[in-house]
Image 1 (tube, rainbow, N blue to C red):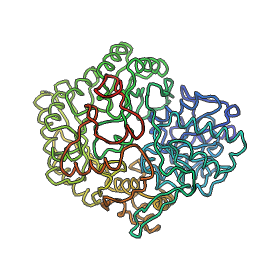
Image 2: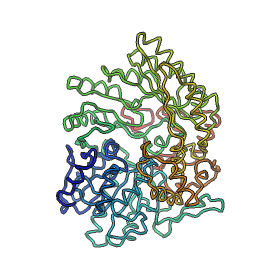
Image 3: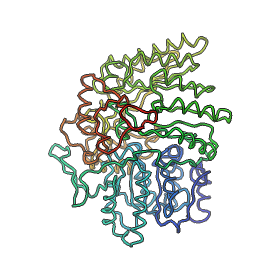
Image 4: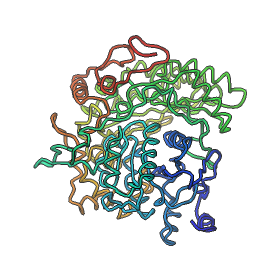
Length: 622
């Protein structure tokens, strides 16, 4: 970007510090001395993207290595996008303010289906052809990773490659390969480059695979187009997180972001086995970090950031086998320095409350639990592993400890759900509010019920299940709204149309790429924000492309159906998921494999890894 051009632009937009790239701990490496150059792109606004731990990890993992650099880019706000388009200025990275098309690799993190149109908008703003087949050696390689790579097929025509699984080691390997190909002068042979990338463990190059369909529109098979391309691509997994890179000098934003705090990742993976949860499946196995290592990392993070809060981060932090010792040690070490400790995720049990009380001695805002379903029958169907007594005991402990506000997360539209399950949500919320009124005399306890809609996800036991129709979800939401009124009771719900689009895209195939592009051309972008989501654009896009979204969202899958993601391997076997689906229908729960009994999901033998529990567990590594 020309001198002074950025200043002129930023003087005309809101929150200009989103685009400066000069925050504390930002890395500015020499462009010429680092021949492999990548921009990490979070397809949402800066405030959302800078709260993403994966960005901090990969940014540090690449920039600590010689010969390669990583810069950042985010979706611009609507005001900056308008100025860029009016002035024909390509979207740029934050650190060097170079156009994105000058990088060798652009890496998008796929956190959420509703970011897919924003990805196309970013490519367009960068002056890069949307379709991978229309790009030449002059364009960057476009790669994707994150949970969306569990089924990347709806995005396949737009991407050159996807990375499945952990990226700390895989991304530097990719950039080292790019540097080598540039040195040899073969980087301009796009097809050869893609063939070479397909040989790297964990990288899936969709253009090297052909999708065949049955007459009924379902997928028949996905097969390599040429020899030497793996028939099945397995995810990358770092067996021991203690050996993995973790950033202790993360970037400190100038403006407030969603999670404005230190994120200390205590472990990766979850063994609870909730049958709707994709994260619990694709991030297996559980790998805990060593306590002493976490304490050292926390010390460095406090020293290098100045943040006043350390969040112990993972899918289920209270499960970390030494969490009590960790929380108490950190609290004792930092309380006098004004640094608090927080737990973003709690189990529904009294232990979690006592733990939260121990680390949140002063500030008691809202305590959040996720019973997920209103009846014990349905909680058994989803394998939640808690009963009503657990929930009531935990919330009573919370009120006794001084919390006045409890938030409860539920999901509606779950398989086998009946009206009694919905009324169970009302019953449970009212009982908790009554408990609060008895245990918090003089106070004004509140219970907030937050309800999302079930979205069937790949790699879960419910990947065969249909989603409730929009009108059915709305009737259920209205019924709950009528019953969850009155003093002390609040009710929030997720827009049914958004959940419908999520369901269409989460289990979609390559044909959906046309609808994504059509929705974007009509103006869809930043759709994770309520004020920007417009369902009409999607309805028009589906009509234009002749795609029936109900085929993807509402259709129960045959037991033997081939899925668009069956040629990818995240470790969990399809046979295990089918068994879990049967057990769900029978109302049978499956025990957590932390108890020592293997549930047979297939991850450990399939990927050659094991659980790593630092507190020790029978039959597992310590």
